[in-house]
Each structure stands twice: as C-alpha cells, then as structure tokens.
Length: 325
Image 1 (cartoon, rainbow, N blue to C red):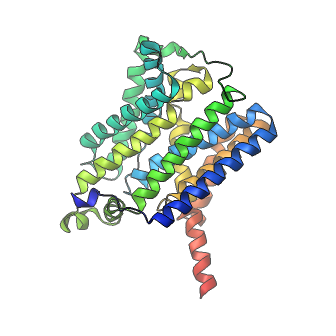
Image 2: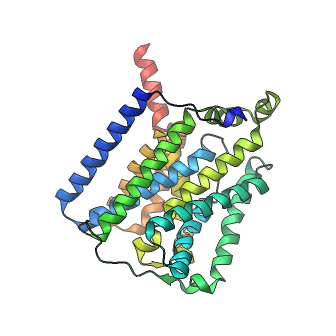
Image 3: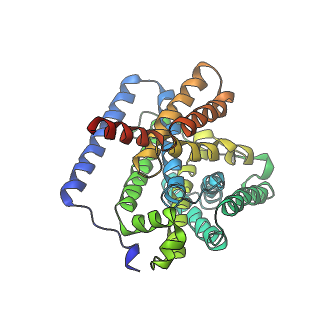
C-alpha cells in the first residue's frame, strides 16, 4: 500500500514551479489579449486540449508502458457527460468538467479491471474495442442526440471575459495546469516508480512485491479522468456534437503521437509534443486544409520513430551526454 503514497515535493521546489506556472499563464493571457483575434483563443484551446489528452494517455501508455488505443472513448465520454448533464440538470460548464472527469475515471477503472490482466497487443485491441462499443451505445442513445447529434447553445459572452472563446481557453488552460501537476506528482512519487518498474519488466516487478494490478488500476483511472476532462468542454467549443466528431480517429492518433514525439518518460514530453504538433496542425488548418492534419501527424511520427525513438527528450539527453564527453 505504501507504494501508492505520493512523496511530498520540497516546498522550495513547489514554490518555484507555482511561480513559473503563474508567470506563464499571465504571459499567455496578455499575449492573446494583445492579438485581439478571437480565433487565437479557439486555436489555443485546441492545443491545450491536446496537452491534456496527451498527458492523460501518457500516464498509462508512457509511465506504465500499456498502449491505449481507446483514448477517443474516454474523451467522448467526457463530452457526452456534459451533454447529458446539461440537458438533465442544467449544470454549468465547470460542474460538467468535474463530472466528465469522474465518469471517465470510473470508465477507466472498469476498463482496467476487465482488461489489465491482458498484456501487449491484446490489451491494445481491448481498448480499441471499448471505443467501438461506446460509440455504438451513443449512436443508439436518443437522449444525447444519437446518430443525429446534439446542439449546445452557449452564451456569446460571460463576465468578466471579453468573449466566450476566452472563457473556454482559460478553463482549458487551468485543466492543462492541473494535468501537468498530476503528471509531475506521479513521476516524482512511489506510484511513478512502481509504474516504471511495470514498464521495464512487469514479471520482475511482481516478483519484487510491486502490487502491479493495483498500480495499473490507479493509472487507468487517472488516465481516463484526465482524458475525460479534456473532452468535457467540447460541446461548448463546437456548439454541435455527433458521434463521428466525438470519437474521431484524430484524438486517438494525436494522444499517442504527441507523447511519442516529445518523450514518454517525463511529464514534459507530452507537453512538448502536444504544443509542437498541435500548433503545426492549427497553422496547416488555417493556411492549407484541416483534412491533411492526420497525414502530417503520420509523417512526423514516422520520422521520430525512425530517427529519434525516444522523442525530443531523448535527443536532448543524447546531445547532452555527447557534449559532456
């Protein structure tokens, strides 16, 4: 049980991280205010959404080494939780984000309990099947729109923000900060050490007394919750949600590619990959066409897998070692 406890970070280290985070948030908000274009908020929202999605995937796929092909299922679960709760109870967006995280976290726990005894490709196929099953259920659930989709009426503005786009951006920015803090805490904890042991050699970890199944259940729950929180604001962002868009292949591909490009063994790797690849996709969407986004992801991913299998962080570590030699 002690392996689940998080080590408390040093107060000075925590203070520096909090100060740097606040300064970064302030710079981003001031820069976007100076731009004065509402599209900048929506583009920034998408990039931050991918930051949260990539971090969520990496908790299980990077730290524990279990490749999850069902990221879109957890993302869509968060989105449709918002649709259902908004229609049933009229909850505000912040409450829906929290609820979306809880629902997707429970979905992750249930999925982990049913599938984590599987390993390798069998686990990956099981998570892919989860996305197919969940999409079929949503398509046949008229209450949330079924195959027709559901419309979400959002206010044009919300005080004290200049626009609703700015409000959505700020919410996703806060979710991204929360996801970074969670991932950073896991990496520096006994939980992170246990997941790393599972990634390196699960049988050896079990023989050494590591409660592997329990740790994997914790990882699937946290991973699902973060991906659900990333998807919860989606109905407000798009104003219309249907199963094809919520379960789009792009979410799964990006959730996997971004950590692999940035580096999977540190919390900052998914952030680097998501910012670089997400920004590139937004630039291509504006200048060329959004239809080639996945093509770009594919080329970039193949290039990194071939030339830098450990991602950008791996390249930096290699360059540092050579420089110190």
